[in-house]
Amino acid sequence: MFSAGLQQPEGSPVQTQGRGRVGVVNSVEERSRCSRYRLDVVMNLSAQGFAPGDVNLTELQQEPCVDGWSYSKDIYQSTVVTEFDLVCKDQWKQPFTSTVYLIGIFVGSFFLGQISDRFGRKPVFFTTIAVQALFTFFQIFSTSWEMFVILMFFTGLGNVANYVAAYILGAETLLGKIRVLFLTLGVGMSFSTGYVMLPLIAYFLRDWKSLQMAVSLPGLLYLPLWWFIPESPRWLLSQGRVEEAEAMMRKASDMNKVKAPAVVFENYNAEDYTKQEKHHTVLDLFKTSNIRNASVTLCLLWLTVSAGYYGVSLNTSKLTPDPYLGCFLSAVVEIPANFCVFFSLKYMSRRICTVSAMVLAGVSLLLLPAVPPSLQWLSVTLEMIGKFSFAASANIQFAYTAEIFPTVLRNTATGLCSATARLGSCLAPFILQLSLYFTFLPPVVLGTMSVGSAIGALFLPETFRRPLPETIEDMQQCKSVMHETEVSLLQVENGVEERSRCSRYRLDVVMNLSAQGSAPGDVNLTELQQEPCVDGWRYSKDIYQSTVVTEVGVGLGYASHKT
Image 1 (cartoon, rainbow, N blue to C red):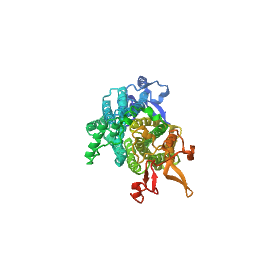
Image 2 (cartoon, helix red, strand yellow; image 1 turned 90 degrees about the horizontal axis):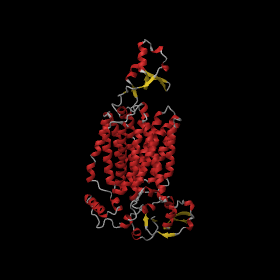
Image 3 (cartoon, rainbow, N blue to C red; image 1 turned 90 degrees about the vertical axis):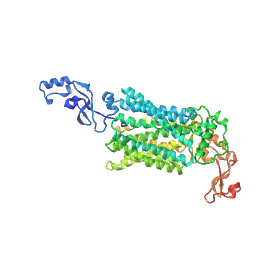
Image 4 (cartoon, rainbow, N blue to C red; image 1 turned 60 degrees about the horizontal axis):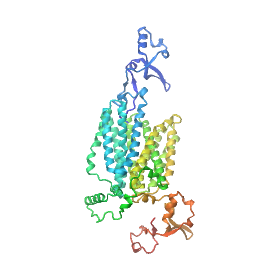
C-alpha cells in the first residue's frame, strides 16, 4: 500500500508555469496533469504579445508531458509510482501491479499447499519465508517496472503460503487449549501487530526503498529457527515415518518433564497410512459427496470473507484524509476481534462462531443504506463492525478448515481455500466500483454475500472438541447434517419424542445415506436398521464426576451413546 503510494502527478515543469491544458473535472475547471498545450505554439503566441484572454484555448494543439512530471511530497517522499512514472497513459500499471501480486498469492496458495502435503510443512514454511524476504528485498534494485512486477509475483508466491504452512504446522503439533490459543491469539495477534506496525513504520520511512528493506530483511532472521521448530508429527505418521515421530514426541515429553509411554503410537497402522493415504491431490477434495460439500462450502465462505475484508479495508481510506491514520484505525479494530475469536472457539461450536460472525458482518453492511447522511458516526461504526466481523471470520475459517480436513489433505485444502480467497480480494475493488451506479450498492452486495454464506455454513460438519482427522476415512465419519441429527434412535417416552440412550441406527447405513446427500426428511427412519451402542457411552457430569455406574457400565439412566 505505502510502497505503491497511488499518486497523481502535479504536472510537467511547463504546467507549473501556467501553460497546462485546462479541463473540467467534477464541474471544476483545473489544469490537466497528463497533457499540455504545445510548447512552441505557446511561446510563439507569447512572443507576439497575446494574452491568455486573446486566444481560443480549445483550438490550440496539445502534446503529452514529454518533459516528465513533478510529484507532491506532502505525504510520500518516493513511491513505485514516482519511481517508474506510473501515471497518465501508464496509470493502468498501478492496479495491475497489485493484481500480479495477488496472482502470485493465488498460485502459491494453490500449489504449495499440495507440495506441503507431499514433502512436509517445515520445508515449505522456511522456503517460502526466504522467497518472500529475498524477492521483496530484490525489488529495491529494480531498473524497470517490468522487472519490479516480476519480482512482485514471486513475493506474492511466498506470502500467504508461509502463513498457511505455519498455521497447519501449529495446528498439527499442538493440542487442546494450547492449539486454540495458537490458532487465535498466537497467529491472529501476530498478524494484527504487524498490521498495526506497518503504518507506523511507513510514517517514518516515507521512501519506498527504505520501507521495502524494513519489511523484508527481518524475515531472514527467522531462518535459523529451522533447527528449533520440529516437523509435524501427524504428517510424519501419514508418511510412515514412525521412528521420527516417536523421537519427536519423546523429546517433547522430556522438555515438559512428562514420562512418555513405552509405545507412543500404540494404535498406529502403517498400512492404513502408507498404502492408502499417499500422493493425494486437490482432486481428492471433490471425490466423495461429504468432502466435496465441505470443500465447496468452505471455498465460498473464504471468497466471501476475503471480498468483504478487503472491500471494507479499501474503503476505510474515506474515514480520514491521512492514509497512515486510516490504515492504523483499520488495523487496530482487528485486535479485539482476535480476543473475541479466542474465547468463542474455546467455548462455542465452530458452526455457531462462523454463522454469527458472517451474519453480524452482513447485517451491519446491509444497514448502511438506512443511515441518514447527518449520522456519519453511525456509518463509520457500522463499517468498523463489518471490518471487525470479517477479521474475526477470517481467523475462524483458518481454524475450522484445519479441523475439518484430514492430515493427508489439510494443507491442500487450506491452500485451495486460500487461493479461492484471493479471487475474493481481486473482486473487492470491482465491487467498490459499483458505487458509481448506486452509492450503497457495494455494502448491499457484500452484506448479501455474507448472509448467504452464513446459511451455507449451517451444513458444515461440527469439529468442536473433537480430534483432528488423520485419514480420509476419518473425515468420512465427520458428522454431516444427516449423520449428526439422525444417528441416535428416536423413540417415544411419556408422549415425548426423544433419542434412545441404549441403541442407535446402524452407523454404516447412516454414513452411506449421508454420503449420498440424503437429508433427514428424505428417509423413513422406522425402516432403518438398528444396533446397540457398541462404542460405549458418554455420561453426564453435571452431578457426579464418576460413579460405579459409569465405571462398570451398568444402568443406563444417565448415559448418552457415543456416535
